[in-house]
Length: 69
Image (cartoon, rainbow, N blue to C red; front, side, top):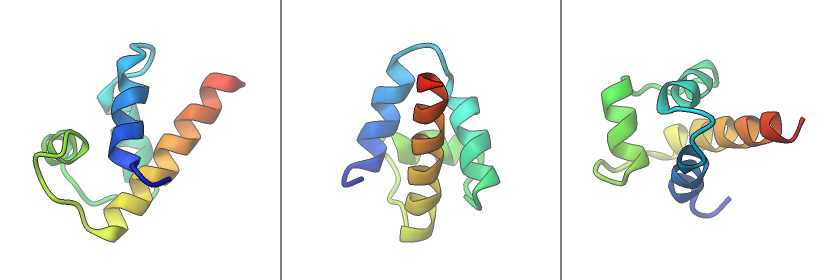
């Protein structure tokens, strides 16, 4: 996933899941940002390190798969 933050924003725009749903999955996969920081880095206000980007990618993929099932 090249643009993980863009994919996260697209997923959130569908309105069936909120930012907190995504943050909980991100946190469960080892993400380290507080919910307010998470919102800022999803919307590209804050930079993101590789570790948090990987946790976000897994969370986005998991949330996307839940929509299919």
